[in-house]
Image 1 (cartoon, rainbow, N blue to C red):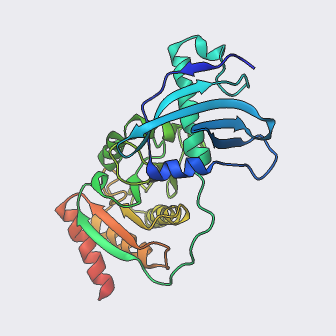
Image 2 (image 1 turned 120 degrees about the horizontal axis):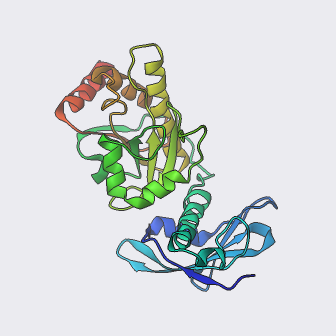
Image 3 (image 1 turned 135 degrees about the horizontal axis):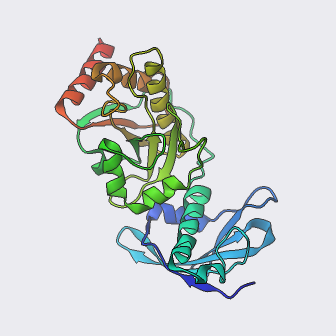
Length: 297
């Protein structure tokens, strides 16, 4: 075992809900090489499962809306974790210890879906249409109109990344690529915690299609919206806010996209109280209002 090393901390506040889940810890169900997470004497300690190999000790301090990471100690000499010898060479390598820690907390601990979901209530959630900035809503989940890399872009994607800050980029980078430069194929969705100025608990990153006018457009857009609502359900959300996916630089016609989006909300019962469409401008809001009216008529 190497000498413990204090690594520099990348500023990060974990909200109250996240801290509750961290304090609950994580004990792997199988005796494999997995992470074991436990609070001991007000310190968060991470081990490599049943090997008992100690990797990180984290100390927190109070913050306005949660707890801030105050100190990070790296204590293990295992191959895939930062060690005293490997983290003492350069500041960049030391900082990678904190990135590794956040990956474990975001993906392995906080990224686990809730297991015991309530039964579907057999009705459509309340549908809310608003002209608003999606980064300001207070729903449990906000949906990002992402691209396949999940590394940010323009429009809604850029606005969410700016509001969330660097932590979101690090969390997205931690998601595995399914092929080079693709973390989320078109028609699918991925989930990360929310960060920075965002009020949501989670961000679902949905990749809609670039509009080409062929038969695949509608299928892929419906699939991306459906995947978003499904992830929100699986993570125990009661409310979710979506933008007009694919209607920005991907050029999907507004009325066609609105019909698909409203249709997905109504296609089956969801374990959600509210589905909000947070729409950026008057033209988009009007298209969604027409879709709701047409469906009701």
